[in-house]
Image (cartoon, rainbow, N blue to C red):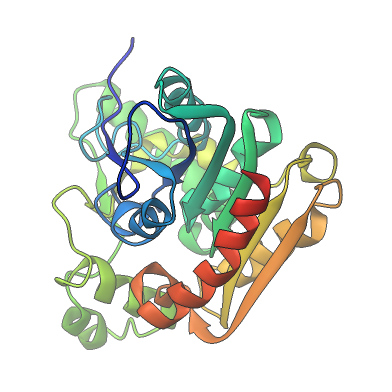
Length: 299
C-alpha cells in the first residue's frame, strides 16, 4: 500500500527555478505537524538564508496519508525522510549533492537515525533531539515497558475483533488544565503551552497517538550503531534547562557517541528549555548563529 506525503516547500528570497540550491529536509516533532516549528520557525529561517526547505507531515499524521491515523512508528518516520529525499532529488532546482536534514524533538532523533544509513544526507542537525524509543520505555510507559506492551497487545486484539481504537491524547487540554491537575513538570507544562494555545496550535498538530500500534516504538533506539555509522557532519542543539522528556540527556548521548562523524558539534544553551527552542526568538536565534555556518560549510 502506498500513500502521499504532504509537504510545504519553502523557497529562498529571489528564488530562480533555473538555478540549483542546497536543500534541507525539516522533520517535525512527535505529535506535531509541518505548519508548526519545522516550517514556521526553522524552515522559514533556513529559506531566508538561501536553502530550499521541505517541511512535511509524517505518514499517518497531519495531511499525509496512511491509515489508521495517528500511528507513531519510528521505522516509518525514518523511512519518510528517505521518501522526501527521493522527491527532492527529482526537483531540478535542488542540488542532490547538497541535502541536509534538520529535526526537532522526536524529529531530531529521527533525523539523526536516518543519517546513519541515508548517505544522501550530507549534514544533520538535531534540535533538542529526543530518542523516542528511550522515552517510551521510560516515562511514557510509567517505567513499565512490559506492562505497556501487554496492554498494547490486548488493545490490538480488541481492535482486530471490531472494537474501537484507543487514541491517547498526549497533553492536557490547556495550560490551565495542566496546572489544575498538578501537571506542572517543565516539559509537560511547556508542551501544553505550545501545542494547546495560539502560540503553536495548528489543525494538523493533534498531539495524539494510536496506542495499539506503538509496540515497535518500545524496541527502537535512535542511537543504535551511531559510533560506527554516523560519518557525516552532525550538530546537536540542546537547552540546559532540563525537563522530563530527556532531550538534554539524549542530545548529549548522541553527540558523545558520534565519534566517527567528520565534524560533530554540540550547542548547549544556558538558561533555555526544550520548548523554548521551538519558537522563542532569542534561543532560536542563538541556535541559528551556529546552524547556518555549520550547514554553510557542509552544504
